[in-house]
Image 1 (spheres, rainbow, N blue to C red):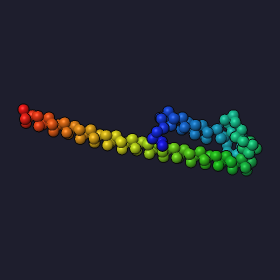
Image 2 (cartoon, rainbow, N blue to C red):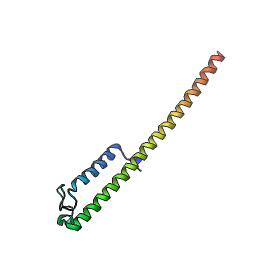
Image 3 (cartoon, rainbow, N blue to C red):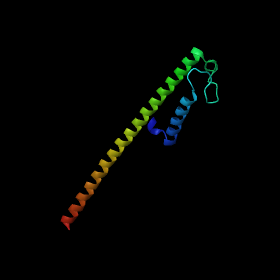
Image 4 (cartoon, rainbow, N blue to C red):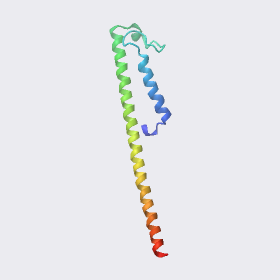
Length: 107
């Protein structure tokens, strides 16, 4: 799936994750820095606010890890593809060189 993500979309998602974690503010201290309240529990602060903020932070870290793993997989697939393409082209070069060698001997 990540293979089909356009590079601009991958960059956008990475920026969104980074901004989300920055907007949390100090965990459990009420509303975040992002202008939104984050919900009534977060706005109230206290133990429930800290718990929700910690769960959100965990969620975003997990999502970021998943996206990074998908991006690594995508790059590895690209590398493998290019290596196979290089091998295919090298075989084509050898085939053409063989034909040229035969032409020299025939002519």
